[in-house]
Amino acid sequence: MNTKRISKFLSLVLRHKPEALPIELDKQGWADLDEIIEKMQRKGMEVDESIIQSVVANNDKQRFRLDLPNRRIRANQGHSINIDLALDPSVPPAVLFHGTATRFIDSIMEKGLIRGSRQHVHLSLDIVTATKVGSRHGKPTILAVDAQTMHQQGYKFFVSENGVWLTEHVPVDFLSRADRQ
Ligand code: HQG
Image (cartoon, rainbow, N blue to C red; front, side, top):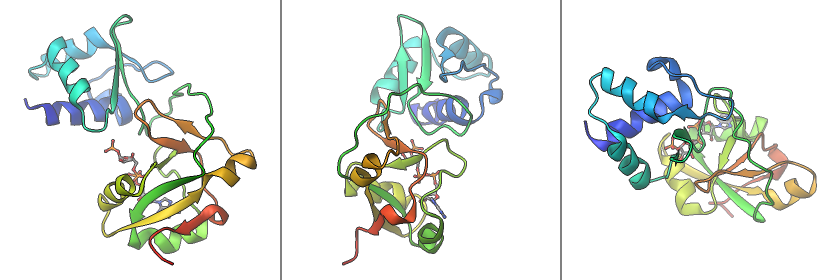
């Protein structure tokens, strides 16, 4: 089983569908490492601890966190299931970016950025990353988020362990098109 498939399966189980294994996640989204390995093996997947370690270490977006002293693993962000990452609010940079597809713009300019099935709206530090995120959905376009004003007005921001900025909702007032004058 190649590492990409293992990573995709871990994303599925740790972010969206633990019942696919099945495995229990705790309130902060942690799964027991030995149990997840054993159950993946039982499904015929060729994994062991060192393979999981290398998948986590080499993952392009650092999607997972392995806590070896406590023998547990979780996804750093991107959940659709209801878990509490227990992140402390952080002061965001003045501007953050959101990459989306052009076909979503009308709706976004009406409702703001909504989290949809995920637990948060995901924001990027730079336009290059945001463009990659947007390209997953179609022709990419970039929105700038006035994070500084939002923060001053009491909106909470969180940064996941892999550097993705998270917030609950971005109202239209704080959005502008970053790729247009
Ligand atoms: C859009 C990936 C219509 C939103 C990435 C996005 C990220 C609206 C889509 C992470 C809307 C949701 C998350 C509105 C937002 N009307 N559409 N009012 N508000 N949208 O995949 O941000 O590879 O749930 O713009 O790198 O694309 O999975 O969110 O296009 O970090 O690790 O609704 O997923 O990481 O799509 O991506 P998603 P996202 P991973």
